[in-house]
Length: 295
Length: 295
Image (cartoon, rainbow over all chains, first blue to last red; front, side):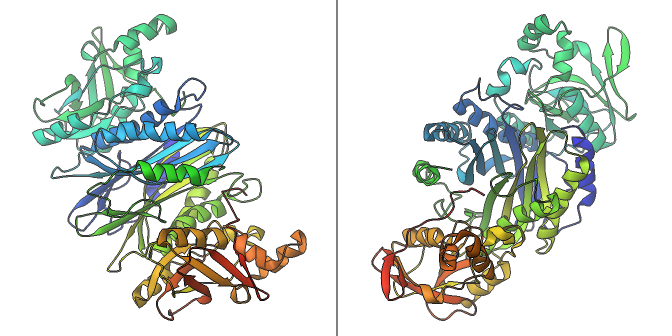
């Protein structure tokens, strides 16, 4: 939404300390002291017809899968294990029962991969379009959550896979990097992590702002997805621009002290807070383009 | 929604056992073993423009308060303490930032009464109407949750306050009975509990079905709210019918072994599974009318 980030900044300033919340809001999931001395993670994500999917094009099973996978991707970004979730559905009035069931089964298909039961929910019908929301609980299971905050000058910047052009279909079918997130946390070398939902350029900015650092990205090392090349034939953009600025890749973006067990290095964290792109021998500002949530 | 209850029955049958979920879905909140040996409660509720409120009539602060209070009322029904929550908002595109802020402050007004911080969330804008969802976490804090299941033949049936006519305005401004729920659980005499969100006739049916029991309600003892009398002048219904069948009172409905510390007795649980109403010397079936979520 226009002004979304301004609103979120304002919300963060409204928050007061709580015995339950050791880490300020603004990460991929909230972190709760539950019980004291241990941690519970809570994430929530709403997915809207006409914004994140198109119910005229996408079938309900795929929509359900996408909603759950977005939440699982938040777990990946925090390096936690999905434990349980609750789901709500606002259905267009008159939708047949079979439609609700397919939506539910899509949610389940995705959640079952991680033995993450749907433990509750709420359904209603209205005259407007479909909206599905999942709230997910994550458990640390022996590994500290990895936050957006924590990147240090000199850290390598990595991604788990090729980027760009997800709008051609991958935004409905991506695999959340839960296992990769766990492996990275186990390695002990990761200092900060986020999943790429808005766009590399925008999510890198979030990570740098939280760490009080900057970054330099080497364009030649950014892995470009075949979809970005395909899409560039329609848009006449450079495929690199799709890799940098398209949303909903849901690969992990992370920074490390040393070589990590997986991932592709695309740059280095800097002390100077500028976020830069080195391309064809030039060094330019990497503007945070990309989504504020539109299809 | 039409078929909502059929859908929910189907969903319940899809559920498989999980190490985290000791109690089957279908209560006011989900109950999670977290950590093993303790309990975490999770509730979720979505509130839709044109269904649960009317954004042309109700201001965003009141809408925010209502959404949070519905979730707090679920905590009341489980006799748990609200601990933390996450909120999502789907805003009509072009809504000013001040509108989002007022919504947030409404959520906060209600949550602050119980020191229940908003720890995360998600916002988006679309071309459809406003929808707000809250997921709430509850903590048992030394008291076992009271479930819908548990009513036994001979138990008294009680409500915490007068019923009916909430549509005249009380559905936006009700007080969740969190403190009452805790006092009832502390007394040790309550066998089952639910909050009246759909209607007394419908929510009593839920409670009886879960317990495998029936009920007889004495019409003369049902406390009728002044709003039910006021509304009956417009509808030409009997005020009793409003008390029995109107939704969104958010009083607690509960059954007890002995006299509880608070509440008004309205009937008795029976072994026979019929749900009956004794009125003017006659005994009639009490049909489960009331909401399937419409304004």
